[in-house]
Image (cartoon, rainbow, N blue to C red; front, side, top):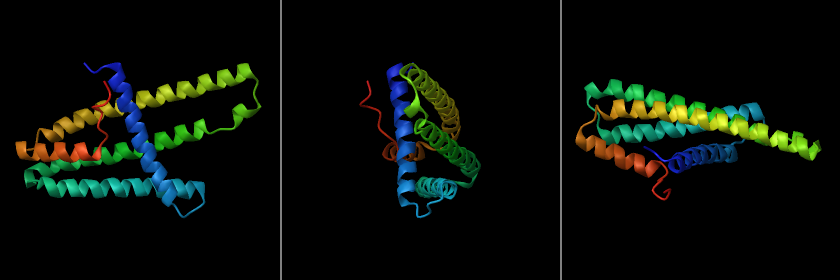
Length: 167
């Protein structure tokens, strides 16, 4: 069973990863319109993810019988990246409100409680997506040969945060 500390560390790392992707996309954005900028950033993250998936697909040298499993898994991953980014942007916007500037101390505490409740909901959504990802990866992984599984493991290890430091 996964410890709470490791689970929280994983969620934190996933959020950080998404924020880094979003932050880089925002920094690279040339459009000052928030709505257009957000859409462009989302497309940048999706293109980045698709490019990484194409490199992995090439390295795996998938056989025709494995392509349906690849298509299902990679489509789920892209949908998950989109959802993660939307949720992170929404959470960031909620955290950056200016409402608390004009509140009394008890009102500020209540306001902070509201923000923490939103963060808890955000973490619960991440847990749900992580559980779905585990099922999808397991299904895809079972369609790979031992050599392909090794390639997948190494590629994923290089592209995701290493949580070994979380004990």
